[in-house]
Length: 263
Ligand SMILES: *Cc1c(COP(=O)(O)O)cnc(C)c1O
Image 1 (cartoon, rainbow, N blue to C red):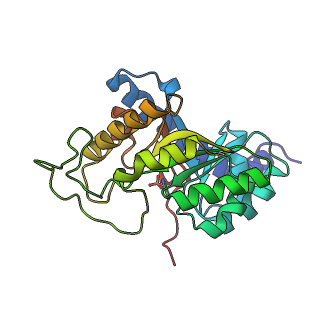
Image 2: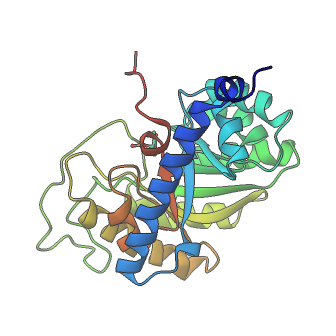
């Protein structure tokens, strides 16, 4: 061994990139919290590892990241079975659209499911979690596109805010059904209601979208006081989410780099 050059060759460049990106996101969070008068300790960054390999998850874990997010059952189940065989302490957040028939699989390995948007799915997850003897924390995903004029406190939609750019396919419950969903989860056997989640509609003003989400989060806390999580904000809009009380950010690109386009 010849010293310096050998050491350089085994240096993990990818880990250095991830560390730098984590630090940059951490600074954005700190600044946004300062501007909003919030304690950064109240904001958790979930690193979204979809499309990236198990080796990156291990690097992130070695850099102190505990909260990871995935959006597809097939990818998540394989990748995290591998990672968890040698990496303890990971909390896995399922953040993708979920078909009812995948509920047993997801309930067997996820710690938190952010995307409960219908009664049928809540019931399927409850049954699956009960059968595997686990408790599962779930968030109600809201569709901030539906009834854009119907704000809490303005149930008739009078003087509505006008249409937010519609983007079908991202899922989320119509806010009208929120009380029913919250009650069903509260009264379930094996689910714990964590709070709410949303994705800002594409092309919409994120401040307006997350402002609505904050009001719905308040409605949920009125029913279930401990359901205090607000999962909102991604690489492009995390500052707006923090302004409106997000407790959990879901950040992929800003930490891992851009993903290959969807096939
Ligand atoms: C992929 C994904 C994210 C992360 O988005 P980035 O823009 O890469 O930070 C957040 N939330 C959900 C629901 C996602 O599917």
